[in-house]
Length: 306
Image 1 (tube, rainbow, N blue to C red):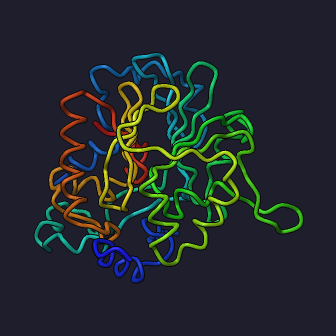
Image 2: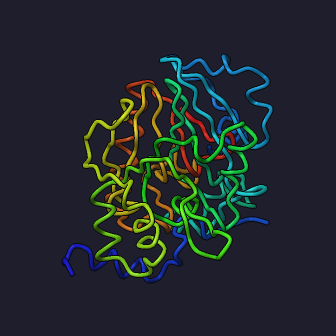
């Protein structure tokens, strides 16, 4: 085993397979929390263009980007999700108390659908059999799983890839998205296939999708103008994706109300804390400088923030 992965592997052994989704529930002050719940539109993003009908589907929010593409937030978890104080060991008691959120920080498990040029592009696939609602949301939007043509994976934790598979009538694990090409980072893939323990799910999913799997490097320009950006730290190959004025940030933040003002605070799911802090600061600055709308897999509903 490579020396630089030893601390990572040791940390992974102590975490359950779900990584960032282990905590399931059944800003500095409240004003900051309200801002998270109802983020203001980015200057070059036309959130208002979504019709009432488009936002009528429960657990979804539709945004129209400057390039005319639509991005739909889909809440993959059931009910309310609050990430507890215990998830943020790096934060002092006084700092956490200043949030005035004693019950926990509002969060979600989310996936995002981009519709452009007649194509349906999915970013992460959610929890799947572990309570995931993504296929239910898609069906409510009038979209069949076979209508998904591209899937981009931010990383390989179970709450991001378990939704790729389901059981057939004979109890065999099979694809959910039969017509989709799946794009995953090579650094992430190599780490899970070779160095990370508790990887049975990851190996199985990648085997099932091997005929439609494409590995990319950071900086690659991917189909439909999607750009893969280095955001390592949460996992070895954690990836952020840019599409026009949208930035899909994956698990860059698990407690937005805390981390938006204190990016030096990690969640306990961030394996390489030093790299995670650097990535969080760099990506947030990049989003601000370029006036990008962030879409995060654990941002509070409705999943968007500036």
